[in-house]
Image (tube, rainbow, N blue to C red):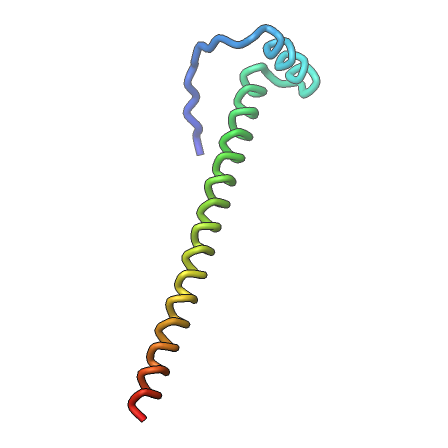
Length: 84
C-alpha cells in the first residue's frame, strides 16, 4: 500500500522543534517522521475517545431498551391480570 505524503508548512515553538530534533536523533529518523508519529498518536487517541463515547452511548441505549422491555412486559402482565 502506498501512502501519499504531502508537504506542509507550520509554525511551531522553537522548544518543540528542538525536542523533535532530539527525538529524531535518538530514533535515527527524520523530524518529519517524528511529527508524523505524534500526529498518528493524536489521531489514535482521538479515535479511541470517540469509540469509547460511542460504546457508552450504546450501553445507555441498551439500558433504556431493557427498561422499556421490562415496562412492556409489566404492562402486558397487568393487562392479563386485569382480564381475569
